[in-house]
Length: 87
Image (cartoon, rainbow, N blue to C red):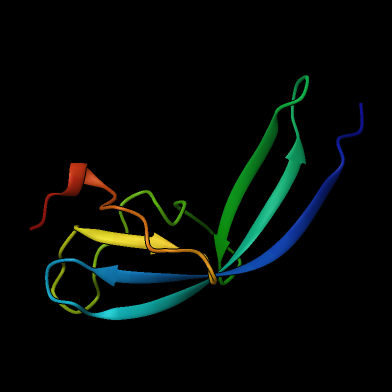
């Protein structure tokens, strides 16, 4: 069985709710047809597997985990990762 697959490039913006630091990260997103109508999405950074942007990316400035992630042209979401706690 052959599964259709394609890759898109996405840049995500991040906003630390702890220190106010703003930054962005480029991802490669592999979309693959799963079983039935499901779509599997695999995230990569620099060719290596990565966690999804909303899965608790820590702030590179303060290490806080109260980080909001958004794609360009979308409003920043509420706190993500570790139920909005910070370290």
